[in-house]
Image (cartoon, rainbow, N blue to C red; front, side, top):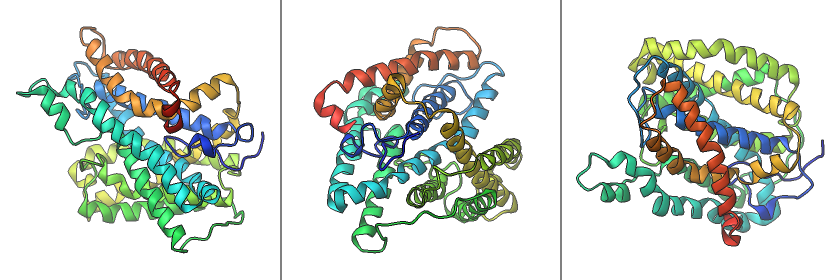
Length: 377
């Protein structure tokens, strides 16, 4: 395994100008690909679940939709936090290389331009399936304020600019010595701290609250902490040195917590989603512990099994960010095209994913053949 100075992270974490060709490990890129594929899985599952949180949603007609609900709930508990952690990992190195001003210009190009392009060009296409009952469907699709999955890109831009501001003000030092690698106890302590902050946050913003620019507003503490952990851990070399036994223990904890997390949500109902109650405190702690354990498992497993560079891995990773930007209208309209197919909900979700994933990567690769687009995506 080669060493690396600055690697390309997920969803706009680093532009092509910041990568070091031939001088990078493959597994962080593999994590990016896995998380991007999970985003598509998530939205395919939502399409046929009991959760009407997608522009095309089919009311479930059989019990397999409950399995899709579990996929959505457990995914939502950790995977976007993992995106922010991986993205934060590469931020300090990018500032080191390009300076604060260069970093800000790069982020505005790599994150701001795709966000605006999606809102102006792709969002109306993505929103049309949800506009069928409107008096003027096209106007509804054009004026809908929800940025869809690109909320992540906008929030990552905000986090990045905050970091740049702190660096410019001298509040953060550019260097960082390797530190002690966190073990299970440190990870558990961070999970408990995240749970406590989340519980307090839920008093003001209950879990499940929808903000126009941040659909899962109740998870904001997780996103901010994971980004900060990515910045700190990248500086201290944590992620390359996480112990395999830490990953195994974290996997056991995550497996044990998963049914508790789902059970508390089902039994506690609205009380578990709010703040200030005992049941919501339990739910918040379970969310925090599960999220960080799941992220550690993915990092350790990817380093062990997915550190395999090659043409296929390079194709998947270099196009992953463009896939994230493009996937929403593709998944939504494939769902519309499959409306006449009669099958159990879980089977239709699998069919939708099997069609959407290769189509998304193909479309992304084709779009990135355009020179100016390739510089951004």
